[in-house]
Length: 301
Ligand code: 13P
Ligand code: SF4
View 1: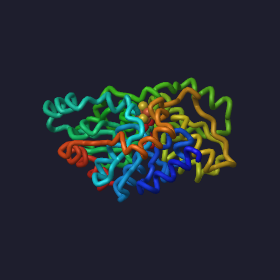
View 2: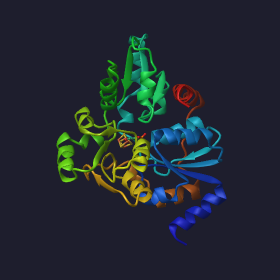
View 3: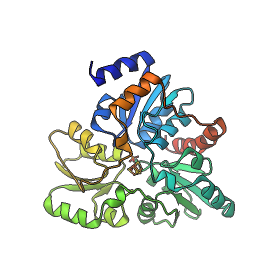
View 4: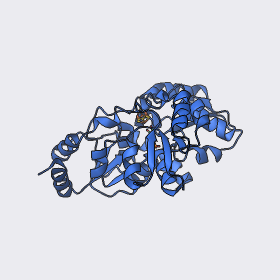
């Protein structure tokens, strides 16, 4: 039996579903029941009634699945697959900020740990951040965390003055304006799509700044045939598979999230066989972390 066949047979035995993020390895995306961006995966987890969810993505995403689907056993195939940006907003530091600034609304990008989510008012993802922030009263003081690039891009787009936490994604921060200029020169007919976690100077040069799910939708619907892609390279697998007649050029080949790549087929096989590592959260933390996610899902169902 191949690894894939063994996984399929164990998946049936366990009655499990496999959810995977758009940045995971191609072979992981190929065995998943659903591949998506953070928002789509949160929605899937919220409606998932499967007894076992194998979550192939970084830890905060698997935690979100557990928060929204507490009855399910959520397996995270590689416990070392974390998100360095999520770790840049320490829950104690956020709680301390909250105590000092009781009138400020704290909006957290979903790329935060469950512990940090317990100290914030509202969550957002790159797929809904613009709509969500635009729906908040303009006079309201807001702290946006932990991604200063996403926050600055939202401030520029919406003419807001949110205070920004000093965090960033080390992977997206590698993309520089000169990479965009060079790629445009090489592929003059291509549209440039970047993730809003990129530096504002990069976003200003792009045709669109979109979540990974937003990019996939855009390329599917666009009449354009060539695209320069400014985000983690894992997304190219799905893009090319879904649009065989279109061409996709990575903006910078070194845009790799090492944490997303940590999850291998062997990890998935072993976690289904041994039913570990499992995401476990104390119930009080899970409930408190759920509140800002629920507000997000309620505001923009
Ligand atoms: P998406 O929600 O756009 O998939 O982004 C998640 C992420 O971690 C980007 O680095
Ligand atoms: Fe975190 Fe960046 Fe990796 Fe996304 S790409 S999971 S933000 S480190």
